[in-house]
Image: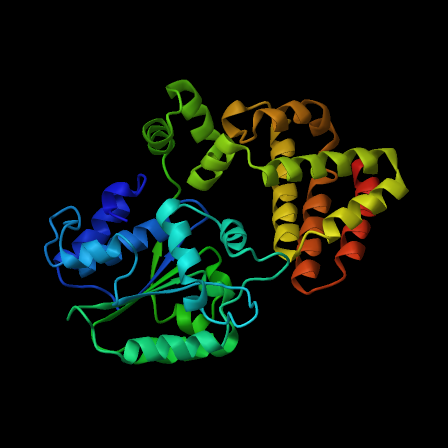
Length: 372
């Protein structure tokens, strides 16, 4: 990944380049921001820039031995740490490194759900396990192959087991010489406060609509008018823009499940609601949490839809068509209740409460809330 390949984020790129050029590279940075804004691509472009001995004022050279290794993500002084699912003897990130390289090289803008699919995780929950801390310590104890910096990129440190997090903390407190840690987080509040206090926080903003539109035109051949519509719907999230283009099966499924629940709850079809709950219960925790997040967005968007302000609407065309009929049922009396119930359901799923009970209970509560 080069800086020139990162979509938008010109101010962030300039700050990172300047750090390297002025020789004031922090030993630990925390890249924070919502999904799809390019935190991982930025961190990788920054790491490549650090490693490149022939860097220009704007980017890595692309031709030196370091850059050649970066092209395949096989640089010996760069280590990736990311959530995995234990399967058989696969217990550490290196066991999944081929899958990781394939995903990152082919589509550097991706979500945890995309990574779970790449791993073929089924119903597993992705974690950075305790054993990974030993791997981090081992790798950083090795001498730098290129004689420069050693870089550890930790994607989603909020998924880190507490044992691993505590060992990482010790490394951050006493970092080996010429070692850089780049943490990429979407939920920094879930990271140990002691780790947060030892990192320099870098908040990455949403991508500008024009930058998303231009990227869709240049990289995916989207027509100009369509690209600006998609960019607006994406609301600064390039992953969402790509998903809107492809209308992947999961998005369609979540939409169908949401519509089905609202209709069944309104009609008080208890037997069918139970079947709906069983369908969701069979999906696996990560997808269940993703659905609840999607449902929260739909409730919020339908409430905003009642304001009749197109600039504030971030729904796809099918979602908007449904909103013309459904939005009147979302109002000041029930919107907070619905959001609270969805948040509670998400907490219960996180805590491994029986999913069938969680979703059936939620659907029953929707009967009452929709009538308010």
